[in-house]
Length: 358
Image (cartoon, rainbow, N blue to C red):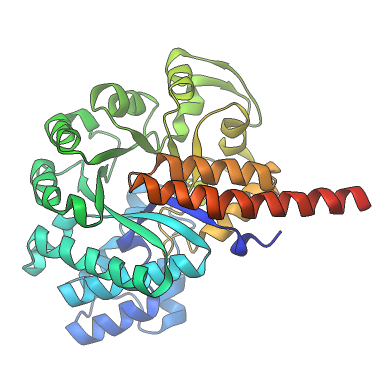
């Protein structure tokens, strides 16, 4: 199966976690940033790869350098444009990419200026490739400016910004410390997705969904702890897991990132396959393409090779992702009906014909 040629959907990808290495070097030179750990492209790419980070906190340290070069509207606009190009070249037809407006304020930018630059870059990539790409504004759960982030985001609701997210270190920083921001986002019409159940227990998922009203859960893989998961199969579900499954709460799963932060010891022990087979509403995501040295094509191939996902499984997961999106519904429905379903049906038919002939 040619996974790159498959139309794919991406709900969980960080703008500052997917910057091109060549762009980092060029911008560091342009803006006089001398803090990079390497100055040639191959060495810097190898340094950024956090495959052995071992924890979420260590994994997040690499972002210091990408944020450092995202120091002007022009730089952010360029990175956003290149992100759209890179995703489109990977076969992604629908994407929601998140970023932290507050992270760039120490460069003298306002949150609104950061948002404008991101949306400008996305619009340019959309015009050049046809990708449907939206933005999600993130606040960090260990900071205290989440309401300010939401207020900055609200005026851009009709300009391509569709959601609000809580990101950053999870353990010790409960999502419900930000209930006011979550309520403000929901009342304004922003979609709400919260990182939870990645590096903390399943209780973090409960806080995100029950206390904060999250429509989606970023990662959410620790929901497997609320089941009888033997590393391969899920049998019994505790009440929280049953609620997440039966209420069809979308889980934005990023398998490779989970391995790099040591959420699970190996791909074979990751619950992605078991969650899908048990009826959970999952999507497959990259999280941070630079730090994990990953594409969504790679993640789809991993899912197929490790968990035996065929074309029909990947079709269901892709449709689930687009249906869970926060973007314009008529556009999403057209992608499902005119692009995703016909392509995967053709691939499944070819697979069946090949199987019959052998």
